[in-house]
Amino acid sequence: MKKKITDYIEKNKDWLINKVIEVTSINTINAPPKGNENNGQKLIEEIFLEMGLETDRFSPDDIPGLKEKHYYLQDRDYTNRDNIVGFTGEEQGPTLIFNGHIDTIDSSEFDWTISGALDPKLVKDRIYGMGACDMKGGIIASIFALKTIIDSNIPIKGKVIIESVVDEEFGGANGSLACMERGYTGDFAIIPEPTSMRVCVSHVGSKVFEVTVKGDTGLNYFGDKMERNNPILLSSKLILALKDYEDHLNSKRGKYKIYKDIKKPMNFMFSDFIAGEIGPTKILTNPLECRLRFYLMNYPEVGEKQFNTMLFDFLKNYPEIYQNIEYGNIVFDNSFRFIEGGDMDLEVKKNKEFVDKVINFGKKLTGRDLEISAAFGGTDFFTFNNYGNTPAIVFGPGGDNLHAANEYVELSDLIDLTKIFANLIYDYCCK
Image 1 (cartoon, one colour):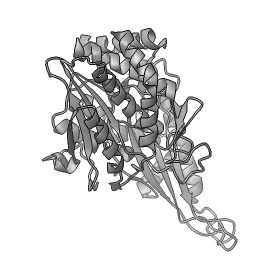
Image 2 (image 1 turned 180 degrees about the vertical axis):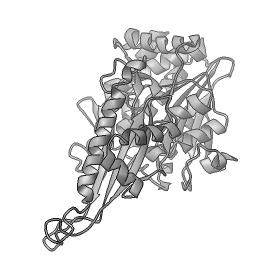
Image 3 (image 1 turned 45 degrees about the vertical axis):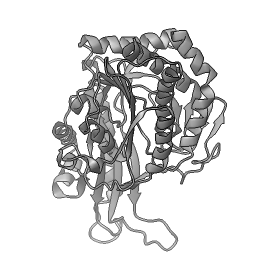
Image 4 (image 1 turned 90 degrees about the horizontal axis):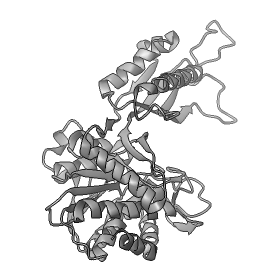
């Protein structure tokens, strides 16, 4: 039967290619508080109906009490932004969930040279386009896996659920939380985010910070006030202190089974730096303030309160930095969502067996030696493990240039993922 499944995938891989290209050509940009996801959800719903799936279309706003939950991210507008859930099976066995977000960030402002942002192309075994890797390719691979089982006339005794959710980018997660609150839970969940074919059973906690660094305008080489507070210099010292904090956290990786063999599990991202203006008529002076945005992370067991406490306790090692925090010259905006970390407990027999099966299928079906690892970027992993009583892994294709021009996904990874996913469905939900 496994040969029949893999043969079908090889013979029909053009379906996968065409659907990835089609959905990647659709504008589903998330622009908080609003978004354009329903443009793509129309296609996903059509595919589900063609496959004969039962479908459920709903907005996060349709879920009673969701906005009152502590984990709901406020100030989102879900007008014309619906989750699409497709499912099938006799519900007489295990339930598998595949979860993916249809929304993308807007990288069209960058210089696309191989394809257009919304004009995807297959070039040398790579599909280029905005969101091809993050994560429309993974969504289509999971759908193709279920289509393979259905088209092969294999009865599904358990239940398979595929969730195409809204508002994951920018720390969203309300789409997946809405699915969980609506009752979509299962024995296992797979999130095919782009992990370069690593099987991620753990997830760091993470958070975006915006920081304002205030200073004194004026010249610091004439006049009586020679020691003016230059926010550019103070910002640079803060960045270097945070890089030290990154090194400090990485030095602790030996305490963690999953992380100890990962060379650099903590990899902070410094995204934006704005300070003053430059121009021929611009006054030469210290800028009044600098604004920075960066993305920090910590190990899975660290909750939000401890996340912040550890950060500021470390910054006490830098008196100039910490004094300016106390004086109000360095102000951290704490309004962004804390994306919780978590772990799939591999001490639980069924969880270990599930992960082992994924690893074994990787070897037997695709010839790949899949690695167990951890997810380092924000995903909806926590919604399943922490609140949905559904052990989850993050496991998806490779690619590059996410959130940038010339984003691409590896076609060979999508094909191999489909083989693994389809055989997981067969083993768990069909036998």
